[in-house]
Image 1 (cartoon, one colour):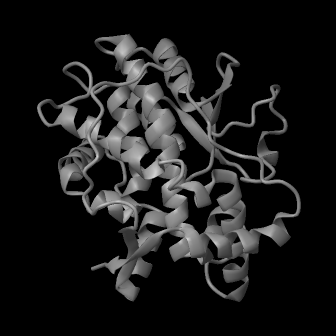
Image 2 (cartoon, rainbow, N blue to C red):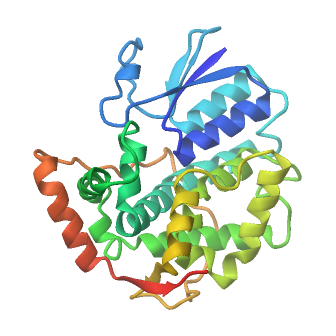
Length: 307
């Protein structure tokens, strides 16, 4: 039995859940408080990463999604997730973790914070309803905290849209002439790409991108083949709000619709996955609303029709 400590909406957690199910491993989930992580305090390690697993059979305890999948491959080699060129598979995984995974999360949170901040308490304060004035106030405070933690106000300066676009274009280009990223069968590289694409489905710039439609179709096929849910949680909630309003923040003022960004020639070599979380600092209850207001004024996103 493996215990998975999770934030249920996390695309990195979905990556691990998918691997556990693919391997046919018996597992159970523990939902973690995003702020205190008190459910992990009893663990005999200093791990605060989510996802983290505890293998009750071996006693192993480790975090970080790619490391977890490597562990599962060692302990449960069949069916394999590293069939073929193992080094190339790992290169894809580390790069996707460090570009697509981080950038997609940052941009999806930005969309949610700007378009439906009242939903954020249902993610970070699960006992609070997503409706009412309390949820609205709490959502704007959380949106401000997330703005500082993930540098939403610097999405343009940091080139986040462009980085994610280059990553997706390279994957789309590679999959235009083959079924899988590496080799002739489904591997951990494909699982990582399909799982980490989850947040980009709420970013209109990408899900309406004409050069990425084939990639989104590829992902749908993988989800169907492996019995994974296509939409859940915040994706469905944001879709309903947009549908009711008739608009989404889909115009990125400094980029052309559909983009003219060239794809990278190859996957860069990384030694370890990156992280992008910043210190929030003190008094988030006071600074959060101001961060949120500044984000609204400076985000550079404009309305587009949504059907």
